Image 1 (cartoon, rainbow, N blue to C red):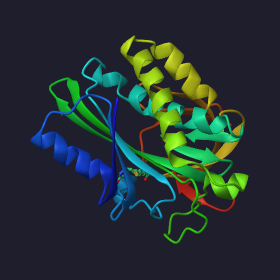
Image 2: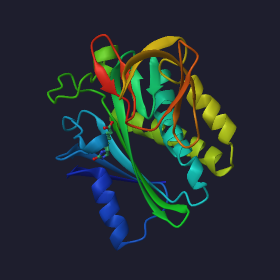
Image 3: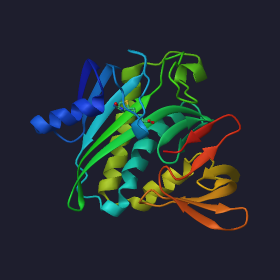
Image 4: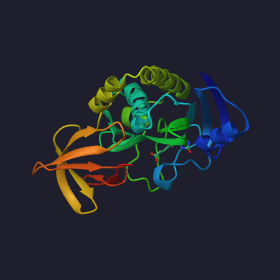
Length: 250
Ligand code: BTN
């Protein structure tokens, strides 16, 4: 593992990608920035992070061994690494499908995975992770952000957290390489937000109550409605409905 720390960049995902176009970098190169001036989120959103207060970093991988139809296992191990480190601090952290990390109904971390696919292989994957740590005021229009400090009322050491997350990620990446797909998937399911009981969801046809059945290795969410009908959704096709927030799932 090779951890590179810089003061500032627009986006660690963008910079790491730029570097890979100019030189060959070893797998598990980690680029950490104290500050991002144009942090990128999912669905073209930005990622708010006050300088020096949070973790914003990207990891370079070459997961050529992973069958394309199992690509979502990569997202699962990233989410697991972050959730497990947080779970040691408090049991209420969960993974919200597809790959947000939540504390109760609020988002503490986001993950942005950018893959390059050649033929049937993921030739390169840049895994971007943003974890809200010591920030106390959020100003963007993100619906429900929260930080560790807001939850646990203490400051956290950023390097210590980074080491733990990268350490857990290394463990899970080895599991992925070893083809331990069932172990990964089971651990991911155990950590899922709203994994039991009926909850409100919204799709293109409106709101409905459903329970979570599973997430498949290609990332689809399988739900069962109160009437017993099974429904299957790709990213962006369904949202979790909260009494306060309509927080999109991807
Ligand atoms: C999301 O919208 O939930 C994903 C947010 C991902 C943010 C991280 S911060 C480090 C890396 N660099 C970026 O520009 N984005 C990711």
